[in-house]
Image (cartoon, rainbow, N blue to C red):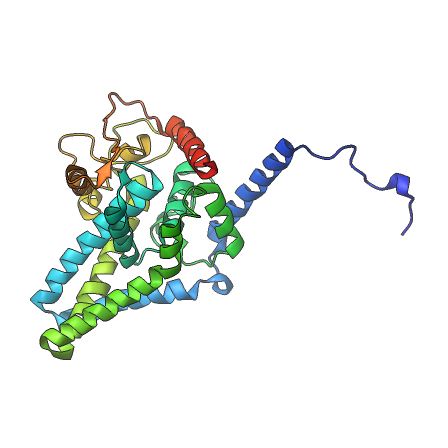
Length: 339
């Protein structure tokens, strides 16, 4: 090794705090883009826990005709609404991810519990991933855009790659800083899988007690496998189909669209162009014909005093506030996390 001290690369000055912050932001962006890139889907990087669970739930549907019962069908329909509309659409999406309302303690615990029972992951992970989607919608870095990874990637394949603990830490720090240290969020972050499996055991035990082991299996197959498969795909159609087909009420910067049949399957979430144009609004349907079942539940919670500060003022015209609202929202969560 030749050379003297005078020839070594020594910086003229140390970077300022602002420069360090910018460097960290760039590094975090690159880490998240890499974490959600389609190239991560390869055999040596498959999250086998998630993959095998999803395969198992789908395969369980093939047993449904052999274990049909009217009780199982009723449980399937009721649990689909409870977990998908109340848990995901109202709890994870409009309440946690977008702060479209505030909830008092009993309702907050209940809707987040329903979200855990859906099997779509923990509240923090769901909310952080969704906020990332809005910031990067249909651009490089969007976790599930059909324009970046293709239709099948946006619908289901993006769930299969294993993502590092570091990328999750970055996502939590950047996108849910005001939520990550809340005791209730930490409670569900640590126990969401327990609630999911406990729900399955409760269905099995209830059915067995009612009418023997076949009824127990019927409730599990219909109340979990069929219900969860239907709920999964109705949620995933929002990621895929509503960025490909439908009409637009607003001129957003992305390709989001309103698709009536997804709105029916996903309890109002299919009015996706409306939502991307004005993401902080509690109602997703902005026209009189755009039926939004989840909005009905929010109105009921408000009527009984469990929901308040509900953002429900519908806009006029085609102008979208997606960029402005995203910037204001990011400032809000940073302020809330510092408080």
